[in-house]
Length: 372
Image 1 (spheres, rainbow, N blue to C red):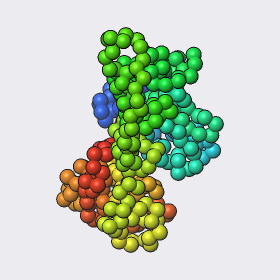
Image 2: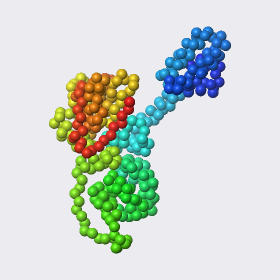
Image 3: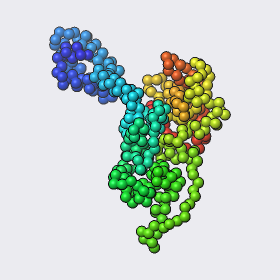
Image 4: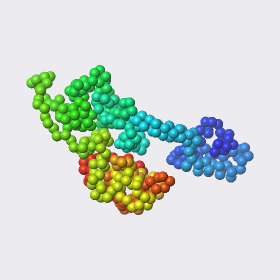
């Protein structure tokens, strides 16, 4: 391609126009207007019409799959730098990814689970410690207030400004100095971000509701009330609430809470799957984190399952996907019968039958990233 542009005596500007047109011609038909310029100039320099036409058709063909060398070099540098950071500075790498969301393939829960499995301590979002963005505390990763679904950034900035002046002493102090409205108070309580001031999320919600109780007779006077004993949330309730408000939980993985029920269904964990021989028949189950059906994969659907021990990659052929389409699309906790395959160190399960295990999760809601 470079020699053809030289033969046509393209200027640097014309060569860049051709490069850009190649990248977009399938979508916008933006390459044909350069045909006469390229072919005409080459013919004027003694090249045959047939040769010039074949060169142009080759350029069109390259435009369908070609990748500019400069882009390839850039991606290679990014891939190397990302791999180095993930290997040597996993906490910083995960922190940067979380602060850059939404982007790419992975949800916050997957990024956090991966970094935990690589030995990094992850600390929860907390009004006494968290900035708006995720931060590093030594070698630990502190989740930022940005992880709380629906919480405005302006709220996070008010909390940070008030905390810089002096530490918060209790929920009332936080609410008054950070000027939190009722919506913001409720979001923080439900996300368990008041734990260091109140305790568990039930107590936190009680505390913020108490601040809204009308006391016109007493004005600004504070009422000393007897301590109220509240039932602590169960682990399942805590994890469900974490996923509802933050999209992840540091307390437990949802699949670990239903592992006993999955064992009665003879479902293997991701780590147990790794111990089964090639081509063994297996049943696995996990949260659906990714569904993708590339247009170049002849109708094959690729699904990633996640449990408390790792991930399982599924290959679902078109006939299986079409026969069990509803289960495939609606399952948050998906069970799969199939056989395990390992090729050149890559492991996946070829799916033969799908099972919807959503009922085991109850009210716990998770989300997948689906690509078509």
